[in-house]
Image (cartoon, rainbow, N blue to C red; front, side):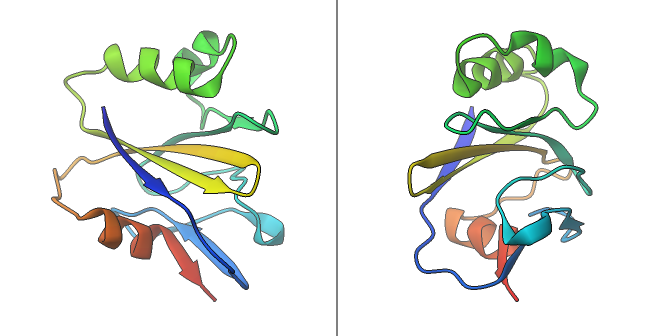
Length: 121
């Protein structure tokens, strides 16, 4: 599983964007919750606040039992042929997970992914 961990510090107003297409993801109210995706977005989940958006992906929704990471691991293991990037954002007591399809097999560093994903406004 291709996964990076981001621990943002002291952020002001920000937007979330697809790290591969640069399209803005709908994250109203300056939050880490995404209700509708864009670009190569597959899903987002929050273990701590029970937020969940399958991005019209019924398969991952059926794996949600005890934790977001278990559902994500099951989903990714069933799609080994896909190049799926998992971004884990740890902010305070909340942990958010985002899944994106890397269709072009871009080789981006964790720092570049973070810069593309979270943009201060």
